[in-house]
Length: 575
Image 1 (tube, rainbow, N blue to C red):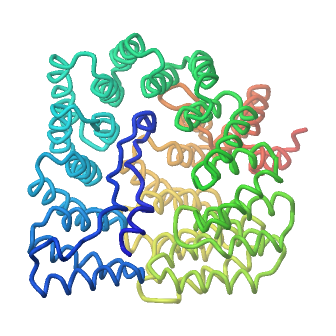
Image 2: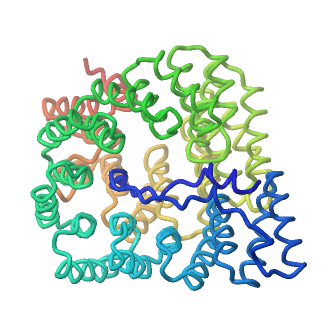
C-alpha cells in the first residue's frame, strides 16, 4: 500500500547549513497508520475510484500518478486525511511546490493539527517563505509544540541583509515573551552571525549554554563563531569536550571535523572516518573523507570512500573525477582515463576534461585527444570556442606548436561566427609570435582590430610586436598610445611602451615606464615575468647589474616554471 512507502520516506528533514537542528528534531507524522477506510467516509463513487487508483499507483511506485490523483481528491473533498496523504507524497517525491500547496490546505482543514502546522512550516522554509514560516512556528509555540525557529534562521542566509534584519527583529520581539526559549535564542544568534555581528551572536550562544549547559545547537553555534573569530583551538577544545559526553551526535562531530580541516588534517580524517561508520549513507561525509585522505596521499582510504559513493549511486561524477585524480597522481594512466571519461556535466566536468586532454597530449596520443574533444564539442556546442582554446593551450603547454596551430585553424574555419572570434584570433596570433611568424601574427591582430578597433589587447599586442621585431616605431607608438588611453593603468601596456623606449635608445624613459609597470600602485610587485625580464635587461645594459640580478631572481621565484627570464639572461650571457 502507499502508506508503506510514505512511512519509509526518503524525504529528509530540512538540514540547515550548520546542522543545528539535529539535537531537537521535528517529529514526523506517523503516516504508516494513515489508511483510507471507504466505509467510514461519505465519498462519491468517483472519489473512491480515484483513491483506489492512487493506492494502486503508489504500490507500483508510480508516485507521480499517485500524487496527481491525491491532489485532485484533496482539493475536491478537503478531507484532512486525504490532504495529509497528498502532502506526504509530495514531500516524498521532493515536489516542494505541491507540498507547500497541500500543507497549507491541510492547515486550513485541520487548523489545530500539530503535524499539519509542522509540515506547512517545513514547506514554507523549503520554498523560502521564512516570514510565513515564522508565523506558523509561532502558532506551534503557543500550542506548546516543538518549533522550527532554528531551521528558519539557518535558511535566512539566502535573504538580503534588510530581510534578515526584519526577521531578526521578530525573533527579538518574541523573546520578550519567551526569553528562555532555546530555539528562539539560537535562531537569533544564527541571524546575528549571518549579519557578521559575531560578538552579539556569541552573547546569545552563551546565554543558551548558561540556561542549557549541554545544548548541542548552542555549542555548534559557539564553535562556528569561535572559528570565524580565528579562535580555532578554543573551538576544537570545546567541541572535543562535548563529544566526550555525546559521542553519537553526528551533527556535532561533523562541525568538529570541519573545523579540524583548518587545523589538523590527520585528526579531521579520523573524525570523518568515524562519521562514515555512524552515517554510512551520508554522501557528504564520504566525499569529505575521500578528499581529505587524497590530499594526505592516503590513497587507499580515499579510493575506498569514492568507491562507496559509486556503490551507493551518489555523487557519481564527482567520485569518478577524484578517482581519476588519484590514478593520475599514481601514474595509472588507464584508470585515470577511464574515470575521467565517466564525469558528466557539472562542477567537475571542465577539470576532468582538462586532465584527460593533458594525459592524451602528454602521451603524444593526438588522435584520442582530438576524438575526445570532438565528442565534447558535439555535446556542448555552445562551448565550442572555449573548448578549442583549451585544446590549443594544452598543446602549447607541452610545446606541440604545429598541432596547436592546426586546432586553431580548424576552429577559425568551422563557422562564420568562429572565424571572427577575437579570442581565437588572438590565441593564434600569440602562437605565431611564439614561432616567430611575425607576418601571420600581425595579420591576425589587424583582423581583430578591424572587428574591434578599440580592443586594447590587440592594440597593445600589435604595438609591442612592431616595436620588438621591426623598426616601425612610429606606428608602434600610435598603437600603444591608443591602448594606454583606453586602459591607462594597465602594467602590460606600460611595459610595452617602456620596451618601445628601450628599442629607440631612450633609456631614461624606458626605465621610468618599466619601473612603473613592475611596481603596482599599492607598492607590490606586479607578477609578470616578461615585465621583470624587460626591466632587468634595461638595468643590465645601463650598468645597474646588481639591481638587474635582484629583479630577475625575484621574478624567477614568482614564476619558477616560466622560461622568459632565464632566456633573457642566457641571451645577455648572464651567469
